Length: 217
Image (cartoon, rainbow, N blue to C red):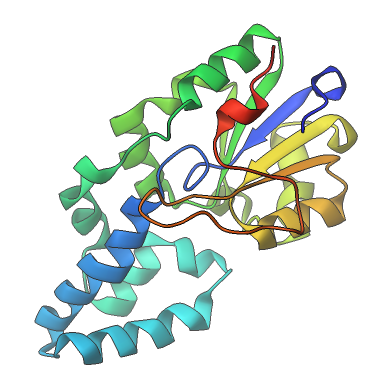
């Protein structure tokens, strides 16, 4: 599904693509509701309903991914709460082998993530994934989430790349749509970003269950 002889730059998402999205899903769907309920004297059902409305309001924006925003919004120390669950941060199978194989082919590797700097730092301390990349780019540093074309335009200013000779692998369909509009030539979706959830059926983009399916020779 990847024409490797046409690729110069490999753009890789982090959460759901390289890292198991179970950490983030469990954090926002289970850990935060319980702490929010306790902090504000709510029953769990009411806390979940309140949070669902707040999540929906900023979905797809930088605020949705911002640790500082949610710390203010919920009156909870989100960075501290994430650290409490750090043992759940896990690298998907075949990721390290894939990165080594891409590196051996001489391709440029760039990690592109919407994760806030504080969350990114925690995950990189746990996994050391950054050691395998030529660059790590955080959407918060560019002032735009990956769901918007502005991110892909601004990315070129800090990490020059040629869209027609690049491939992006991401679990987010809105992100892939933005990258397609910008002109990134090869796009792959991830069917199972959360190892505890079933595979998704994806028709809009070529999709993989794991990176072993597109391992360079």
